[in-house]
Length: 252
Ligand code: NDP
Image (tube, rainbow, N blue to C red; front, side, top):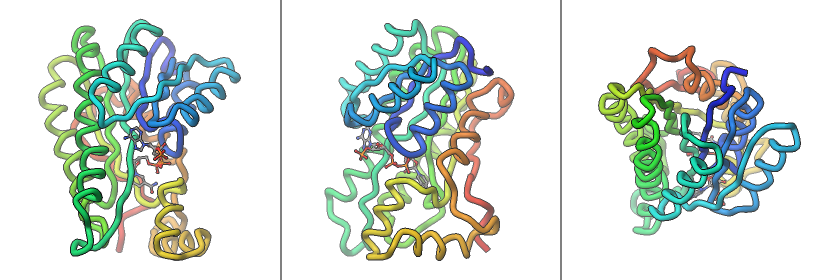
């Protein structure tokens, strides 16, 4: 119960890595505000947490909309009394080669990942600074290192690493740790969408990808949630401004 009395807010918490993180933090004692662009998936995850005896609320929150983000943070604080942990999982992909990327592909990805994270951090840090305590984890990706067909996403995910370092510098004096995790290929709706775009069977894609991964398998949402939970815990009290790759090993 390492998060007893802690309050966490997760963006994109209705599915995939965000949902696994919400469930794990709740199992370890945190009260969790599960937010997602649609209320349905967020409510489903929050209801599951409550059914297991945990504390959770669900909020529809589009991270690209300042008013919705500020309202979601305010609701979490009103309901649970404080905010200790922010994990920004909301994300989309709009993949295409550079000569085919549209303005919408670019703006959608940059706004969701970069502006969405900026808005969430800005709203959350006010409450953390006031209490001189906070843990913030941003979702980057191995795509930050470059990935064909993902110029928009790679730029956003590399940007998040710079954002994490800068926030660590600015917020460290207030007792706030800020880190990024950079997953590789994780089994979620997002990577299913990649298979669809490539016209490949998902199981076949996973096998192709796994063959390139030193640990020999693709990742699961829990693989990432476990590292996020560590970074949100006081065991990681002296870790800040780092990007931890959770990818089954480096590419050879
Ligand atoms: P999922 O698609 O499973 O979950 C992402 C969630 O974010 C979805 O519920 C999605 O809703 C939601 N979302 C999308 N846009 C917004 C928005 N504007 N406001 C609020 N919520 C939004 O993806 P993952 O769990 O795989 O991804 C989580 C994070 O991890 C993302 O930042 C992703 O980029 C990152 N990541 C994922 C990897 C992977 O292999 N899966 C690898 C590296 C990084 P909806 O489904 O309705 O769009």
